[in-house]
Length: 276
Image (cartoon, rainbow, N blue to C red):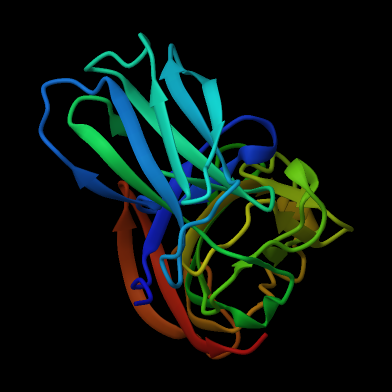
């Protein structure tokens, strides 16, 4: 039976296995021992729950703000894996990452005590972006002091397909979710890389379901004589725009009045049903 769609959160890992999801990718089956001497689990296809053999599973721990891979195993013919050793102390927190066709699928952060069986879901890769859609995209535009404009984007991308959209390229140079952003931006945060003057790509693969992407950047007001132009690369159900109260929007915006965000007053504008 296919598994239900789920929303995923953010976990960060070094090098080519940096990924992000809102909630746990892993489904947990938990017994109640006092301490876990062995961590076992299975890697399965996320659509039909069939076991996936020969998948790599990496064991990561976080200490002193450093994420370190401790050991890596390969699943057997039945998709099974296990980890054991003196590093499995009862209070240990860890993350497992299954790699399928080179694409990482992390669990949530887990504790060694009480964990005996973990199911990691993976999906087949796809280069077809036709199943990508944005239910909600929020943009906050405000001053950051001096002569600089601070812009924050919070995006939910829905992969409506049954495969992970992987885009093109590999590692940190992979081009997955695409964004059209103003030329001349600087101090860009997040996992975006530039691919031209106004095209940027997030490098994290998008499995089926919802993925949240956020990033910020700054602009010079002198470069915005014609205002801030938003271009939707994907169909967008709702664009929420938060701007300074003395600013306004042109186009099919609904003015929802002023609102307070973290002690700052913004004008809230909304546009619905944006076409790519």
